[in-house]
Length: 131
Image 1 (tube, rainbow, N blue to C red):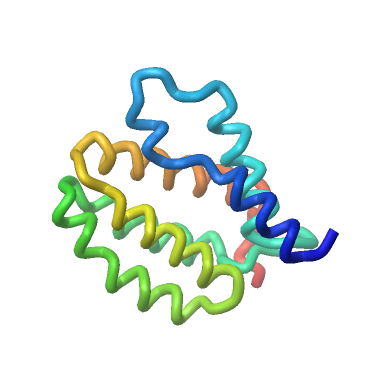
Image 2 (spheres, rainbow, N blue to C red):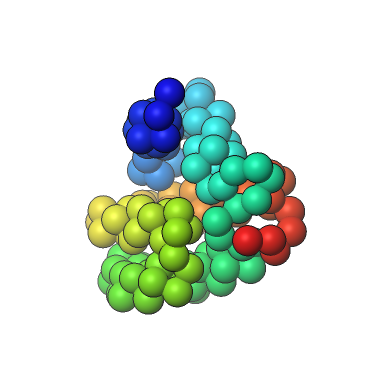
């Protein structure tokens, strides 16, 4: 299977953060998210984004408590993506696109939970700051 086909396969697996805003979270949500992090964030036991870089992004997101504040993070996400490069850049751009789709306070909370879960799975699969 080519790398392009593999990438497409995992893009389809990536769950939508808005599922966390629902009363009934899909049963396979966290399973899909775990697979997404494990396979999309890196290979050979190394991540394309360090835990510190991911934590810094999460800290920006965690501070925001409303839709407007979250939307204002978009330029910072672009700047961060440019500094990271590689697959890490693509991942941060995906997060920026998610932020563009936030329209309610419930979605703000859901996105924070989504990022917490990504951070947890990333820490599990890629525990050290190794690029």
